[in-house]
Image (cartoon, rainbow, N blue to C red; front, side, top):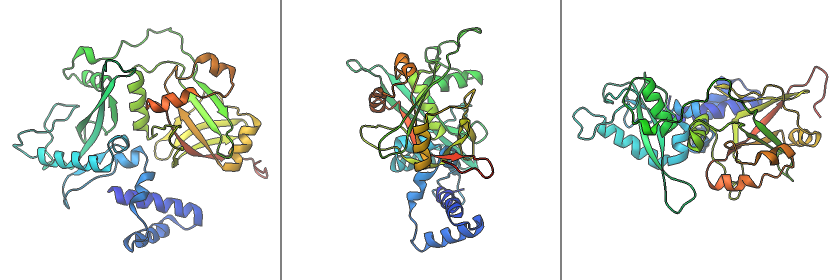
Length: 337
């Protein structure tokens, strides 16, 4: 399925929900408008990870489909992705001087024989003297269709997966050993904040550090389909494929269309009344997440709503979030307030 086709299908689903049309009728209308110039490629910005991971780029009709992870396009941009795919089309030919190799089996990728080829990215961090955080290098990760779906990896994540498959790795690139059984697990933290004239904020922070560090957290969120967010420079992007389910007990879970529940707490979250009122009014909320320790624990437990530390997290590209629809499940005859 092409990226354009998937974008048009997403637009058709939105139109069907807004107008009450059947999906089939809405898809016909959307395609007709696209062909007549009534729609543009901006719809591609609304694709989430799975949709983008299932989006192919075909240099010529009938050729291999190039399936690109959502996070790859987010980090590189459409033009750079196009250049990487063109490189793969050239170097994936038999006899190429610089062939492309599958990172998950170490075999050559032959684009003349493969039905589809997956493209992901590895984030490689190297110490940068004089700077507070390491420099980051992005390396394309080619994989066969049968070896694994495209995603964004921290280098230690990719190394660990290679070792799991019996492939050679540099042991220095592996993450620390997992914690021993019986070690204390800290519950995740969350904070509700009401902003003036905008949807309310919901901040979710892991209680335990990511095994692969900030790069692993960043790789996972990009693979999930959540964009990085610098609050000092931009507003949260609306992503219609993401939603928050709620009922009278509180917020139940966060979900993404196509993959199901992304996060579900042990018990429903119970926002303050003013937060719920703002979410009802805007029919949405801004969900933010960052690695463990981004906001000091004492500050989170105090519940002051002071999220100034997230400005620095945004500059460091480890804050992720989007504006999501809040779906209130009310009982029969009950009016949502």
